[in-house]
Image 1 (spheres, rainbow, N blue to C red):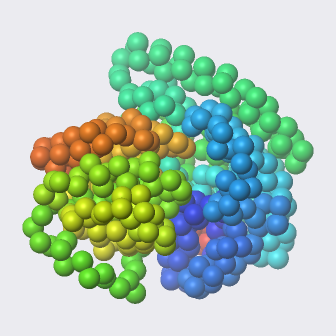
Image 2 (image 1 turned 60 degrees about the horizontal axis):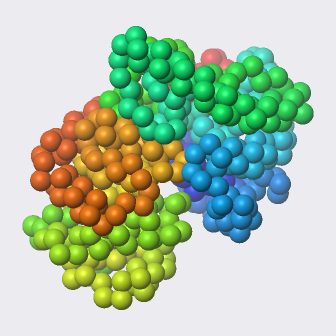
Image 3 (image 1 turned 180 degrees about the vertical axis):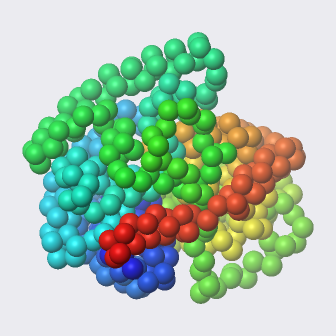
Length: 436
């Protein structure tokens, strides 16, 4: 069995997928240490792993980012906000993160370091050490592919790909423009790594893809734009199945999910849900007089109260909830209205549920664009859609069987992959030669 360090940026959306993978590795008998923010210690211990917290300088709490970094809220989504995030959340704390990882490796000589895309210690180790002097490095891709390619438009605004020479020329020009936009961030990244004695040879956002031994993308090829120039060590391993929550107590309204009315679930996920007026509340208003059952999954303990306060009178066809396990809820759904979180969209497609996507921050425009490109849903191209837009989009998805059909095509493709086996096979391939 292998010794594995599983690392993650200490944010919910980054930690959840690697904890799911870590739990499977523990079940298979591997010795696992989870290395991330201290608030996730209990969850790591619950799966049978050991736990090591990030050093205090890098131990951020994403629930307090608005308080700790008030300037971020003043920045528009896009390059300005992304640069801020990288300087403050990823690269800014990287020296402390790497220092803590090196100390952990001295105590726990791992065969494998496995992390998500934002865990920049992996490319630092790759650049700083020869392969025979370090653990094997495995990176999990839990957002759309953002590595630059002549075959796709630049990552960010959610522009759909086209084919042909003109498209390739456009893509090349866009990629060059984006590199120029992020030139200051590139300089910041080079200086940060230089402080650690490492030279950054790549475009910053390409680095995690190129400087790892195995890049395992957590989706299927059908949900990603075709590219002819992907690194050889990058492969698709399928979508992580939704985590089971056998302890969930079903609310009194649960039998209504099987009443025959179309079920529409709306969520803003677990991260970008600080203002439910962005999507949840407008969706509830938009669908109030339709013959559908609306489940507002706020992913917040106070979410139902916030929605009630905003609406005063909750429509008769709406059921409010805080945390609802999607593995239980989405098999009943006919549509998911979402702000485009990668994990939530993947879970919906895993169940063959078509989508209405409305997101503008982080990677959400790119997720929504892929929903549109696959034909599995409607892309509203905004994070704050109007009531009329939402109503029309939901009716379109419910009334046009093509969206459900395309979602089910992706669900079938996802069913042909086992990401746990693929990840375990990668780690077994590392451990076996060393044990032999």
